[in-house]
Image 1 (cartoon, helix red, strand yellow):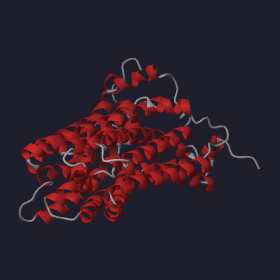
Image 2 (image 1 turned 90 degrees about the horizontal axis):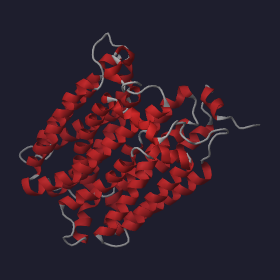
Image 3 (image 1 turned 90 degrees about the vertical axis):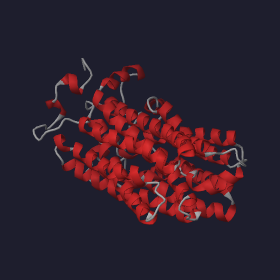
Image 4 (image 1 turned 30 degrees about the horizontal axis):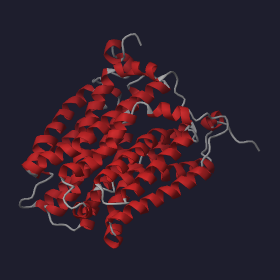
Amino acid sequence: MTEPTASDIAQQTKVSGKAWGMLAVTYFASICAPLCQFKIPPLASWLFPAFHGALDSVTFGTLMSAIALIGVVLAFPAAFIARRMGLKNVILLSVACLGVGSALGGVDANLTLLLVSRLLEGVGIGLIGVAAPSCVTIWFPERKRGLALGLWATWVPVGSVLAFNTVPMIAGAFGYQTVFFSLAGVCLVAFVLFCVVYRMPEGATGDMGIEGTFVESLKYCKNRRIWILGAVFFLFSMTTIGIMNTYYNTFLETQLGFDAQTASSLSSIIMFISLFVAPLTGLVSDKLPLGRKYLVGIVMMVLLIPTGFFMFYVGDGATAVMWATIVLQGIGGGMCGGSLRPMAPMLMRNTAMGATMAMAIMQFCQNLGSAIGSPLFGAVMSTQGWETASFMLQLPAYVLALVLCFFILPRGKHVTSLDDVPADKAWPKGF
């Protein structure tokens, strides 16, 4: 019996067992990225003493922003790298970078070496986020790809929850360097499994189906709406990934007195909530008419704005405030992933290149926001304190994002498609 071709798979009505197997190994490889990325915040209690004063709030933030900086650099060329190397080879390269980077970080308590290891991990994260979705969709029928991608999209929250809950246990029992080597071992297993199990369907090229050259793709960057959406993602990433994901764990330890394991577990609840909110928000957003989709972003920012006031509160009732922060951040963050990111491809014409560049702009803005947010908050917090730093950075960012959400998509009950919008307001001139 001959293997089905890529075009055959796209037209099938049922998902094959082989497709689920390909999703499983791709998902395992993908989870290695957030495991490596988010191992640093839960290790704060071990890293600060280990580096004997060489590590302060700003450099600690830099350990997180170093990964995002590589994401900024790779955001646009990543798809073309995948097209040249092939999807499978890019995933293998990504996991190898994650594994080698993690192992390198555990070699010695050397800040320069640790920063280099984070940059190497950033290469893996930047590439796998682009190639993995195509590795999944190419094995699923067109009518089932939403389900497949919805499952795959949980890679970041699941990996984050695992990192925040397992890293303190490993570090507490065996030392912080064991965490680096353990995750390198996980990456090695993922590398071998993906290498052995995954293969492209018959007739598939593995080039992501994008057309044209990198220079030709830049015309898509003239779309003003995608940059408004990107600006919202920049602000959200600066506050959520750059600030909350990096420092909230440390705040719970140093300011509210929780031990390292409890603080990490509490922080992970935010991502756990997002894990369920994101797909539900996507479902709601799909049912809203185009002219009303912006309302999801409005609700999201209304939920997040209060956390800019009290996320780092330490006065009376601090525990109740902490739980309010966890819930609001979990719901608001999940709504962002479930509603705003899927808007990116719809802002471009229906071409593989357009969709690819839309997601590249989103990746660029997301990584730039998190790269700036971590060290900036560390610098302000070290001189102004936790609450003042939140007022100065988080609160204005959330308010500005709220305003921008009104301009991502056209508004009004009579707007049914972007084709209803004048071309000079929706698309690049001459496109």
